[in-house]
Image (tube, rainbow, N blue to C red):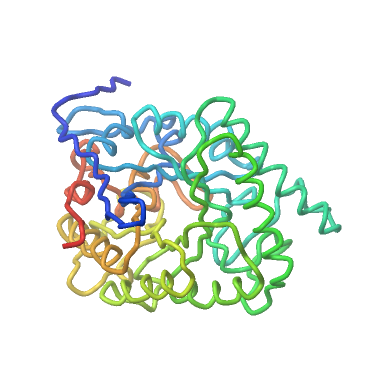
Length: 375
């Protein structure tokens, strides 16, 4: 594949900072704007490509030089059903992100498959463990050893997400557990042990920012109240998934939820997953996840509508005191790849690339380069 690096890109660092006055002077907090690029290696192996102004270009360079400063990547424990999102694939993604000059957010799913608000299935390697102390050691050792391997390669991530959309109890034997049946003592013990592993792995390195991730702000407001009552500790950022399709909060109300989470728990808040469609057209045989019911009044499923949605969402995060926005899988374009549910992509209509124009970038890529500084 003929990748290019070009000085024709508009090079914007987008390290938008709010100066915080302290007794010793000024310190800065980066405003993170980024993308989850977990699918890129797989898409390229299937023959997919990305373009800028009609020229095939390394997607990591497209995002970096458009203003993104962080790449998120998911890690499954031992996904025997795919050769992607395992350690080797994730190491490759992290290296590519760092070589492009971006920070990395590593997302531990603590599962062999998708972990989300409806299922948190324990890895098969741990499924027979009945002794909670051994399970605590297992999550600690796995987290610690993974990070030490990355440390030995000189590519430690700047952010670590301990669990993915952990609305329900982690490391469960069955899916579809309800949030009101969480064993909070067990759940927080496991999360705290994973957090300790992260901190121990970075004992000789600059400490990363540790994220606890909950889907939808209304759920986070309830979840963190119970988590703090059960002594969750040692993390830095409340990470949110925010999808209008599944949230009770409108974009206009999002800032209030972020502000409340931040003030009540003394933690930074960041949207680590979000997306919006630029079209309702399906370009392949994989049904699109974001369809008509994902649309919000005032934001049509058009390239400009997608850009306006992301611009206004990011402004809401800034106005609420949040520290960043990460778009979920903007590079999951249609290709010869297959999922277990269809051929192609379930997300190409919410990607940042137009398949009708040689997978060239859509206007939404410009949201990275806007000035979201607090006025």
